[in-house]
Length: 256
Image (cartoon, rainbow, N blue to C red; front, side, top):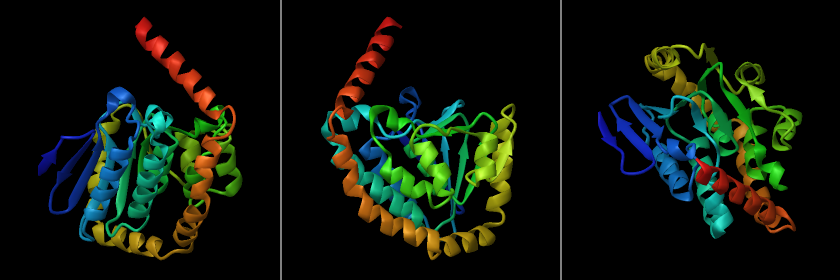
């Protein structure tokens, strides 16, 4: 297996597996525009005979979402462009995608799980969309959530009133398999091997999803709603709330 660790995303390749590992654990795997672009490019490079394995190097979290400091600092257009490209790459992937997750999966982290064909999760998983606390409605995330969830549940999550535990995420259809938190890494790897050994079946599943109604509707909806993201960000009070949050976060880090 070749391994690249030059960025906060590590890539490992074998003949049958493309491993994409989020390695920015010190920043809760918050996705920058560059990380989104790299992730999307990696998925797009996968061949149909491979399986994409998406996971986190952290033993306690999956992904906290998009990097707030980056988009608050004027990089929202770049993040939006990279996010849309990543979503399209995952939604139209030639290779099936298996995600392994535990701990927090928020915002864009929840989106990553919804774009996977199989999600193997620990019981301590919780899936949330906290952006509304800033007055921002996660429009792009909602479009992806709606491809897997009933609209009402997706709306509750995007309004910050619905946080899915691992068990609830399994009931809702985001999680395929839920495993005990103790010994999760080893058990999850065994389940990954199980699916990789049945690659033709996974590929048929992926090909069906690629042409399925939910995927087609999602991709069309993304093009329509994406401009609303910038409008929402520029609305009165949004940037001030984000700035206040970041100031408070900086103060807590200094006290440590």
